[in-house]
Length: 499
Ligand code: ADP
Image 1 (cartoon, rainbow, N blue to C red):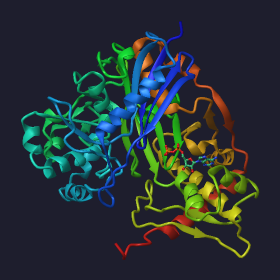
Image 2 (image 1 turned 60 degrees about the vertical axis):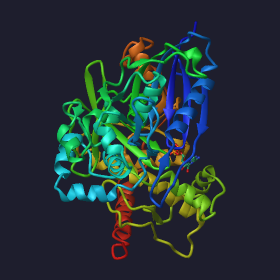
Image 3 (image 1 turned 30 degrees about the vertical axis):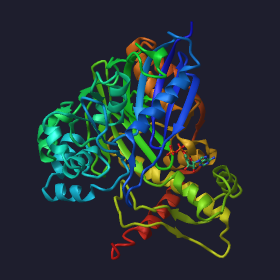
């Protein structure tokens, strides 16, 4: 009888569930989008009940591919940092989920910086002080929503990132836990001791009673409760793997050895490198989080992100109307040999690591009378590869890389992958199984449930679809990269006087 492992992949715009076979193939899948709530400019919320309802429905539908008893384990991966508060007694949320993208706590972050907390936060949590992370979102709810602080102090409320919220609901309110990778994104978690940091919780006025128990990423947290409408057939299935989406993708790409790295080419890009059992810090504004802790061994990950990558292709399509679809960007770009000296810096919302310049704005340089839309399309694809190269160059100051494993919507572009290999001077490896995030969650759960024995077995399940090897001369690429850096300089500090 075939055995399956189910993964919940709770993303920013949709809830998905995927069933994986023992050989790592996709056996069933369902997906449901849910509402994005924008109460004010810069604010982003989700309805936690909608997150649970759509995820439950996706799981019920995906599970239809299996007969009763065939699902051996359930793993969870999720949009990170998004903060939810609910009543311990009833499981009712007391406010909407404040989403990772939400900037409402920027002023709280400025005050924390003014108090000189940056070094403590970096040293203990591996993070920067930013509205992105959950800690200030919790503080905002407790400070702003009438009655919440008192209730939190009386122990009546629970906090969770989305993994906690799903595990709580799946276990019928019996289990209040989070995993180390998700805890790492709260700005409250000491990544050295793997415990909540009491001093930081105090600095943010967050009562410890609110927080879930932090747990390793691959062990049984609880089982699916009886009587959850739609999930009756899954009652008793162990929930035994959990990791935030980027950590899960690193695991799903089998980057088990220090120095192995993956990049996800989506709306933005996320590059993560396994740096082994010591949480090294980068001086260039990369963050350090727990990747996973499995069977007593913790792997840390260095992470950098690019704010605008695939979104620049969407911009060509939706705002400029230069292309009708994303694949057309490839076809146009492939119709010429190079961007003809044109550079696009898609700093639409400023620049992240290693520049950290919120005053940067998008720039196109090198236009001539002969520039065509093909040159612009090619320069946009190049800009994605250049930005990832920027990140990897600073990562390599911590540890050199031997190859880059890739996934995400824009990794289907052969030209982009080839350009990336040329710029890095490293092989770029695209796997057959593109659902690396969900597979990572399934792999963590399947390891705990004994479906897979060890990392070696998981490693063998990952098969390359294509490996792009560097073709072009290093000197030629180095010249282009220098020009890219000049273009970036032109985009920097652009709106300094207007903010
Ligand atoms: P996210 O999860 O961030 O929403 P996805 O991983 O689904 O993103 O990737 C979507 C991105 O992939 C889009 O921004 C789109 O521009 C890009 N994309 C999709 N198909 C292609 C293609 N053929 N060539 C280049 N980019 C593509």
